Image (tube, rainbow, N blue to C red; front, side, top):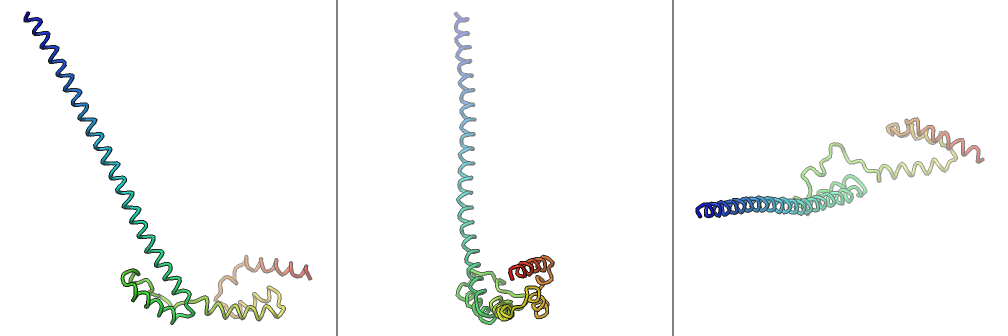
Length: 167
């Protein structure tokens, strides 16, 4: 009978060991499941945080771009500087301190460009050839590097030949 009792105890011990291993496995599963939930939660929090940050940064940059456009569209450098100071005054902290810092005086296409465009309209109406127009432009505006470009000269030569054929 002691042998049956010993065998019964051995069976109970084996069942107990199996249950302990099952419990250990379940604990490991629980740890991994908790880790996966935590990692997923952190990923979601990171995604939402990045979304808020990028939206805020995009809004800041869009605001700065619109302010720069408004300043750039002014008629001259004096008006542009006044507009820039105005925006810095009414939106403190929204624009970087050196946002309108200028290393050289403002160059506005609208002022200088308008005068050049008027000049071009006048000389173009005088029946000069495209090459003659380019040569006049180079004499009057020697700082314009585009006039020294060989591709520009080639394009104008093609245009000149095309115009001569049409006549």
